Image (tube, rainbow, N blue to C red):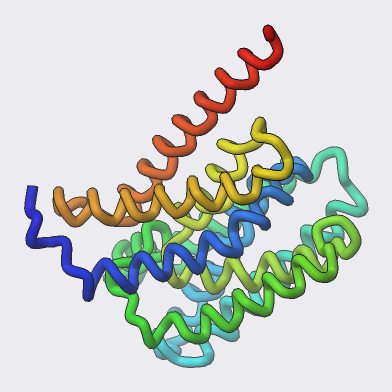
Length: 259
């Protein structure tokens, strides 16, 4: 255990990135869970990643604006397609989302097949590099997420505007994937929402935020102390905090029903 690894200059930006992600992904994740389209985040995240991979194949700079355009365009195209399938094939929407995810993931593998650095690029997209985030990277993300949250809570998008829901989801997930990776995006969306589903409605959103914040903070600290991959460690800490919360809430619910 290395206590000297708890460097605020490294953990600070990473934790702030996690808090920004949680701010938007908790309400989005609740909507996804309520609508029964749980794997849409994985599909959209993978499509956004496919846009990044395709841009790299064309030789565009990793930090260039072309990468962002490619990622957002791919994700929004995927969102529009999934919105269309929801209207036409609602009963099999979840299955179609799974197929889209598999196709995007395997196409990414095919595009990277002859790239000597393909394995490293794929790992970065899936697991992310949250510890390498800088404060300067977070300003545009913070502004984007603020706009998303404003639109989400003022327009009641999850219930009234299905297409806008898909598009906002695509934009948000695209930014998050490049910041923290596909796996952590999925965990941030689903675990807090799943863990707090039995909590009283008035406290559900706040409780989900607490699960997300504690999961990110404990994951970053644990990864620093034991020198383990941060993204994977945060996913596990989110799962542990979520399971603890769900178990505690389930016990309380059982006690109330017997009283």
